[in-house]
Image (cartoon, rainbow, N blue to C red; front, side):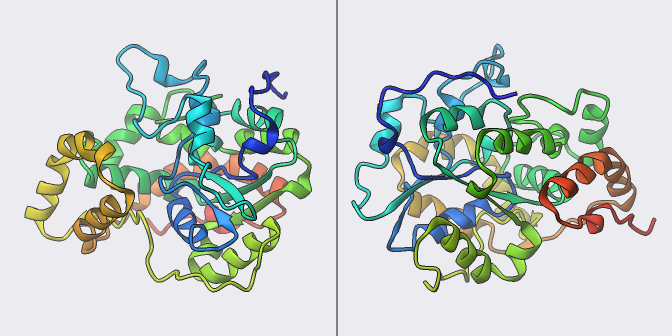
Length: 315
C-alpha cells in the first residue's frame, strides 16, 4: 500500500531527477563517486543526505529515546534543495541515499513530489551485505559486539520483516517488501535494478547501463580504478587498526569541518591494507535459511536467477 504523503512546498523541478535508493553495502558509495565524474550528472559532494527519510522520522528507530540522528542527514527542505543550487542547468540531478531502501515509507514520499523520477537499485546477497556491514563497522569503531556470531544470536529471534530496518543488521537483509513499495509507487520502466556481482565484475558496463537509463551519454569513460568504502575486513597493522577505531569520537567532531575529499583520503589511507575475515560456513548456512524465502520473492520481482545466493557452503 502506498503511503499518503503531502507534497513538499517546492515545485517538482526543484527536486532531484533520479534516486539511487540502495541497498547499503552494495556499492552505492562507489556509484556516487563515479556518477560525480559525468559532465551531465550532478550529485552533491556528500552522499546520503537521506532527505526523504530524515524529513519525517515517524516509525524510525531514530525517534527512540537516546537515538542520535546521523549528522549527514538533511531534514530541512530548503537545505536539501540548496544541495543542488550549483547544478549546471543542462545536467540531471541525483540523490544517492541507501537508507531509502530500508523503509517502506520513502517510495511514496519521493513519488508525491517527483512521480516522474528515475529509481536506481543495487542489490546484493543479503548474507554478504549484512556481514559486510558488521565487519566495516567493527573496523571503524562503530560496533562493540565482538563477533558476528554473537550479533546473530542477539537478533535472530527478533522481527526481521520491518517497515523500517534502518540501523539494523539481520532485518536490513529482508528487502523484498521494501523494493515492492517502489514497484507500487513508480512505473516499472522508471526503475532500474543492478546486482552487486555484475557491478563488481563489469563496473564500466553497469555505469554505462545506468547512464543510458538516465538519458545521458553512456559512452563516457568513468575512472573506476578506486573502490570506495570497501569493507575489507580487519586492518592488517594492529596499531593502525586500533588507532583508526579509537579515533571515532575525533572523526565525528571534525566531520562537519572537513571536505569530503579529505575525509575520503583519510579513510582510504587508513583502510588500504586490510585482511579479509571470511564468514564462518555454519553462520552463512544459518543465514541462508533465514533469507531463503525473501530471495525467492526477489527472484520473481527482478526476473533474475538468484540461486547462487542460496548455495550452501561446505561445512
